[in-house]
Amino acid sequence: MRLGAAVLASASLFALAPSGPPPVAVLPSRLADTGGGSQLVIAEAPRGDATSGTLTWWDLRGGHWARAGSAPARFGARGLVEGGARRQGTNTTPTGLYGLPFAFGTRAAPDGTAMPYRRVTENSWWCQDNASASYNRWTEPRPADCRATESEHLVTYDRQYAYALVVGFNYERPVRGRGAGIFLHVDGSGPTAGCVSVPEDAMRRILAWADPARSPHIAIGTRGGETAVTRY
Image (cartoon, rainbow, N blue to C red; front, side, top):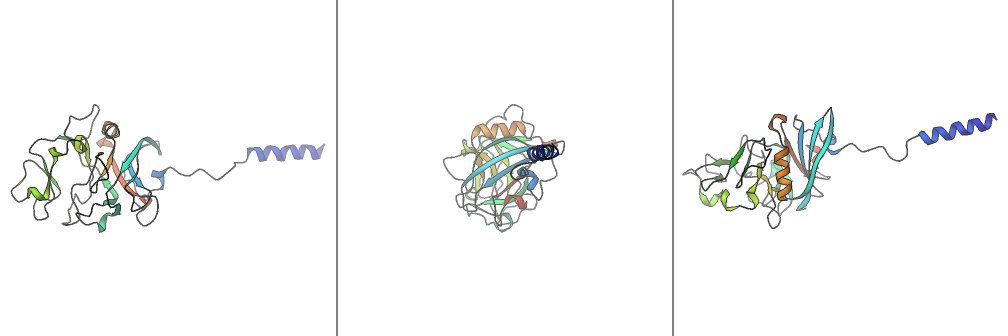
């Protein structure tokens, strides 16, 4: 009788013991930094030379990150590169953790948009001229020291810039030659020139979700290696 009871007790303990590996922490919890806010967008590619991957966006509530949405993402035609080492004109997407200063678009802001939103007009340009005082800035109209050949006339990208968020790469204190005009925007026909793009419906959902009061940031990186998104 005592032996049978001992076997039964042992079996009960075994049944209650956890099986398999411990659960893996959600991706935002594994990042070195999330920007200090309670909203986070993560753009992750499988490797540095990839031109596609996944975009997820997350809410921090009660100390826990919960995924609010996901979508397929596209990156630069020449993959991803460490943001601090990026050079302008290389068609690479800069990795790192960045703020999202404001949104813009050729169309009206989606319902529920709380981010500052600028409507694109015929006079809207993004200056990418390294010699201009307006380097890596929205300008309206284009200033005389910013050459049209070195800038993006935003209205001409009606599809890609239907809805967009400015990625704060090289934005606060621009370094000439590092790159300008990095956005999260609507997909075009293929990889980007260095931005991150998603389907239009995803971009609309992100704009309706993002709340400037919650300091949203975007982390861009790869699944592993020197540009792993978890480094940022």
